[in-house]
Image 1 (cartoon, rainbow, N blue to C red):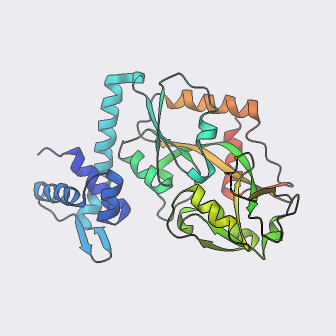
Image 2: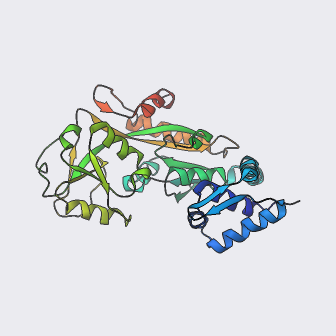
Image 3: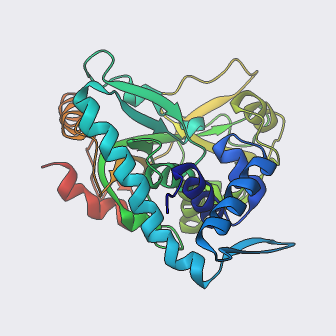
Length: 317
């Protein structure tokens, strides 16, 4: 019995997204093609692997038993390619957290020309899924706990702590301030570029400093989001302090103090069969971090969620 990795990849995408449409979008194929791959896999194995209903899809008991072996097969396929091509194959790195411009940090890290290929992931769950399917080798963004615990399947290293400013429009009551404390924002509304479930940092910030929040609806990009912010007198958002703001009339970035929130960037990669270029990339991040003082953290001055603070000891070694 020969199993087709493309069919296993389709099956895993549905089990991870719990939805045929979202899984097909993630794999860049039609929903019909996705259904055919899974139907063929079920035919070959002689078992129904997924239960479908109006709300989505969930693995059957047989499907649950297949998840780990399927991941192992895809990891073995990726390891076979690496074994043949060796370090000559570029490391495939997906970034996420696009509003906070992750490529500013990745671009500051010195790597050999052609050693890394950059792609773009939607969020941590989608990058994690691509890593476990062997489609990419590493990810760069904000690593955090996931409700299903799948984040534990990744190795990760904190590489940068970045101060963030509060950004307000011209008609906001606090637009004239030279600096603000997070508690000064309690009468404002924290504007989110997409659903709160995908914005763990902003959600944690709102919870810690007792802010209400709302999403703009469809994510149409940074310019649309910031234009909406500029036109809403009660709204604020957070952005990295050194990120240039677009040319929106009156838009202002104001430093946050007492405490200063820090956004944590991490490199993540699969624990099983990592790409041979991972150690060199980690060294490059470490060297850049030391030169640019990326990991400075003072508990009496700065704010980090507890999980990021716990990672600092490993990151500075």
